[in-house]
Length: 214
Picture 1 (cartoon, rainbow, N blue to C red):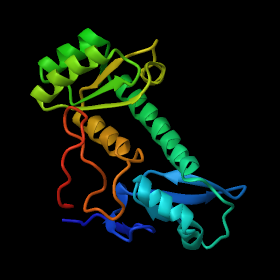
Picture 2: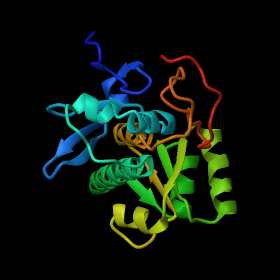
Picture 3: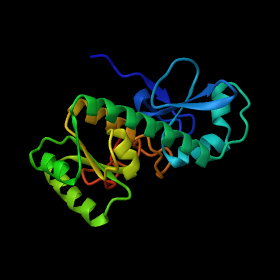
Picture 4: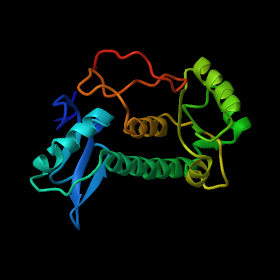
């Protein structure tokens, strides 16, 4: 069995699989680019957790690892770059899943997919009705389906090639796994150097108690 490549977080110094870290690299014009895992060339790897990102910025760990003197950057700006990269990747993956007919959208279609155990991942819009979202999340947890709420109706609609969408379900395990891997890169407010990449998300999209790193 081939082992996954690992890298060290420049902030907390924890050694993690490369695919579970965010890679910060230089782009033309002395700006910073974001890779959601690996990438070619020189890069600085960091946990997608607010304390690690904050420490990497304040202590100058990114510039030190990249071997350059970086202009000052606020942690909020770095997190914004990561969220933007996550959004673009999620949009691209959902577009591929839609063209492969592995996505359904709309409250009734998503609810039906969950009840038929056809859904592998449910995405709910952050600006959707709270009561409707809770109802769908209850169904999802009963079916053991992961449920995330990170984007607005407009973003979800654009990703699946239509008007605003409050609910989207991915029916293919491969696409669902790829999307969850990307969604876990959204910066989280957890303790730096903790035993996990971030707070685990249960099928209701809630934080689970931390457990030992696997």
